[in-house]
Length: 230
Image (cartoon, rainbow, N blue to C red; front, side, top):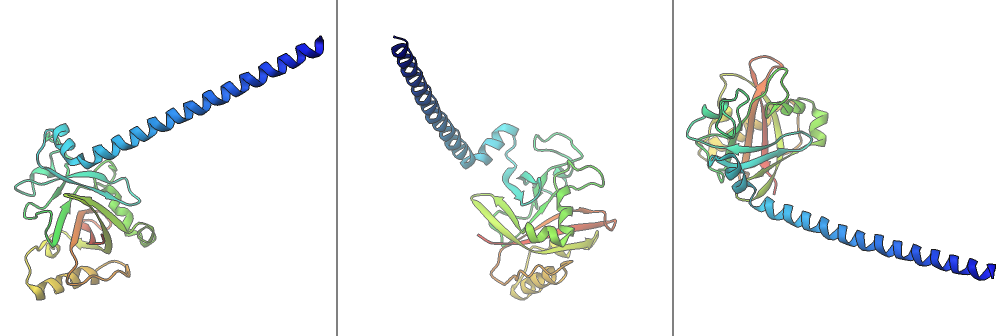
């Protein structure tokens, strides 16, 4: 009799264990479905990210997004009718000394050369382009060579030059070229890099020049120059 009771207990235990296993398996399937839904929703949202940003901030000046590998830089890009307004206004068009990341007002998103600006500060690391200082270290560049830009589509840009220029030297801001001056300009950007990136740039390349203030030394700019990679 005791033996029979023992068998019944073992049987009940196995049934309970099997039920729990199936329950957990089903839950995992449900969790996986939830995860897939979240992922799909995120992908759908990213397709209209710029449109959503315009609505969220109430700002039609938002035209794109920039991210830089190895940094915390993940910023919306704005563009207006001058290069002054977003020096001290944020995405909500509120006065803000940190400003916003903006494209040169002379540019369009499909230009052969694009200029993008954003603030840096000596001690405040919450300004948009503070992390560009990391590129003063060649070893950091070797591990983080790419800039991602999103305008009409997602694009990747390969950094070919890291420059330091004195304030007042605006050669890098030139946007109008003939064939000869374009080649001269590319050579100027490449040859004045603070270290050799080993990345060549040619006549047919599209480029972006990203500018922020530098304090090592004082009264200079850091320029991150990249060519369209894909």
